Image 1 (spheres, rainbow, N blue to C red):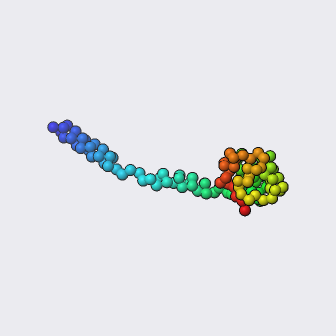
Image 2 (image 1 turned 90 degrees about the vertical axis):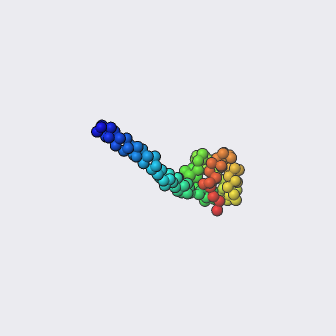
Image 3 (image 1 turned 45 degrees about the vertical axis):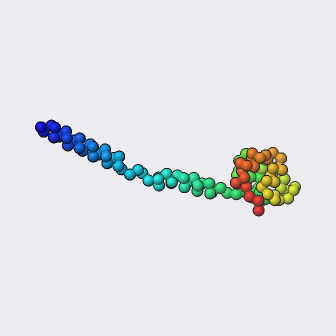
Length: 111
């Protein structure tokens, strides 16, 4: 008789524990928002490069796909043709194509 009473108590305890585990609230989404906010902050830190005032070293360092030769070509174009009126005018520089321009469009500025 004692054994069946003990088994009944254990069964009741395990049943209530499993119901409590199922009914527990799910974790809040605040832990997910943290990393997303960091990613947005990193994107906001993108510095603009002014095509009309940046030197070759800055262009080479800040722009993707622009090495020493292309950076010097940009500066040479600016010196011979005057300041850039628009970012799209960069396509007229020898060695700069649509792919490089699109990759760097968000980093470029013309003042």
